[in-house]
Length: 289
Image 1 (cartoon, rainbow, N blue to C red):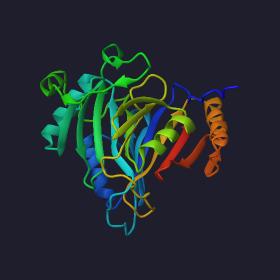
Image 2 (cartoon, helix red, strand yellow):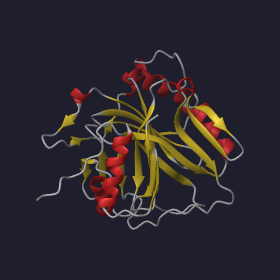
Image 3 (tube, rainbow, N blue to C red):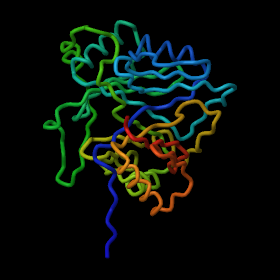
């Protein structure tokens, strides 16, 4: 009898991202004054940033004492903040330009419009809005084809109302894009172990995975090189990323699949599972609050 393929709950999506930082104060200043997040909590060694009105956690910064010198390792390519509307992207783009933020690109991906930049420690950032699903190139096999062309920046700016330079209520971490060591092992993990669907591929360079019918919650690429080493505790950059599932049943089903797949090295609690992907990157799976 053919074994049924496991699929993660289609309502699952990406949650907060953790970054290890050398200069906590400088990173807090950048993400609040330039990017548009707000401080939800902070102490000497950590800060939680997000949307204050709804207490939505999006970014957790953790200070590392005596960090390692940066090397090419598996880790974060970018954290992608998803804004609710094109108007919100227009407001953010206008604010970034007004603040002379270090914008490094802007693209239309067919399913989204996106602006790219880096924080002071070199962590990639994408800020984007999704187009209506009716405009997505959804293939008969369920794959969602992306493109990369120049974004209509004038159209995006024209949509703004300049109501705020902060991220609005409803902003989420839409996806996380990773630099990985091996695309095949990574694909096996996100498809067979976590139960996500393969949504698109870019030759032998990149793969995109998602729960349900989204274009991607996880992006992976080998643009930084193949066979990258796993990060250590003292390496700056990605600390962890979160996948949120809607309920206990979804978490239990995922745990059972992890056990079937022979994943033994994981920390299981009532409302969370923490494990490493094949690149040594920490994945936190939690029940959404």
